[in-house]
Length: 320
Ligand SMILES: Cc1cc2nc3c(=O)[nH]c(=O)nc-3n(C[C@H](O)[C@H](O)[C@H](O)COP(=O)(O)OP(=O)(O)OC[C@H]3O[C@@H](n4cnc5c(N)ncnc54)[C@H](O)[C@@H]3O)c2cc1C
Image (tube, rainbow, N blue to C red; front, side, top):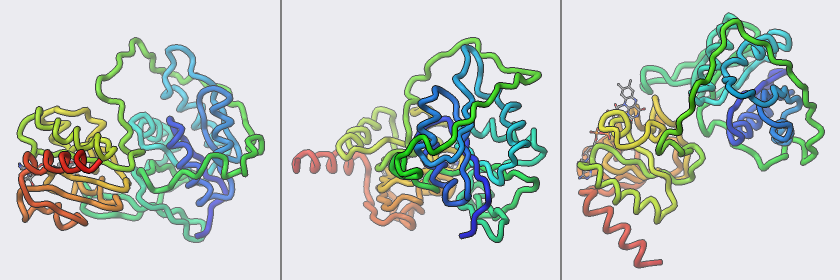
């Protein structure tokens, strides 16, 4: 694949930063990383393979990440990277939108594939709620895209620079106060939101086949036994509200690429499956043998989950 000259990456979390740096190395001759936090964080980005780390410093008390849009868009205008890869977190998407507005371009969201054809950046992403893919090209000197999970894999730390952290140059960036800033007045922790489905090797998804919230205990027990994170279909998080929104999988939720996806009481509508069909192995449990999920599953069990889940957990425990 041909490469462009400069690819920059912007991520809030370290694992996403490592993945985007790996992607940057595939797509660009030079990788630049925009990093907040301590100098150690900036050095980490260099170890992940960034040639230049644009170090934005630590967030001052009460300052929001969003306030950096002016600082970063000025930098983008000056340095004109060909491509900016952004972590698709809510804050990442927000920032991507603001940066694109500052540059007079638009964001191509949730890239499923990025190819460079003779210097032309072509981005494939899902449209019509997962019904089709479209290949798009952005106008302007810098293409901005948020990148779906699992598109690039993170290399072992420091592989980009053979472990020599100081090979990546660290450039200190001065903060530019935007005309209108966002102030954080109060922070409250959100119960149950601490989950990183993208990083999980095994995910067990629960759907509307569960009649009662209390029945989820059967799924949680099995997940614990096989070392899986629990995710869900959208109606479980945004209909009956049995789980946090961070746990729902699909086109408008988390996009996964685990080794195993175990879908229980999930019909397999396209909007859900686009978030799960990159799994290496899909196993479905559903009482309806005509459920669409069985067309995408590698293995299927037709039956009532209230009988199958305790039986599976019992078998695993008995064979330990
Ligand atoms: C624009 C748009 C975006 C959307 N985005 C998403 C998204 O990101 N993620 C998402 O998940 N959905 C999304 N949806 C909703 C999606 O279309 C489906 O409605 C949803 O995924 C269905 O969830 P489900 O499979 O849990 O429920 P259902 O479709 O109701 O399926 C329940 C399944 O459980 C089975 N079942 C019932 N009882 C049992 C039992 N006792 N034992 C075993 N099996 C049983 C049934 O046979 C059925 O197949 C979106 C929809 C739209 C329009």
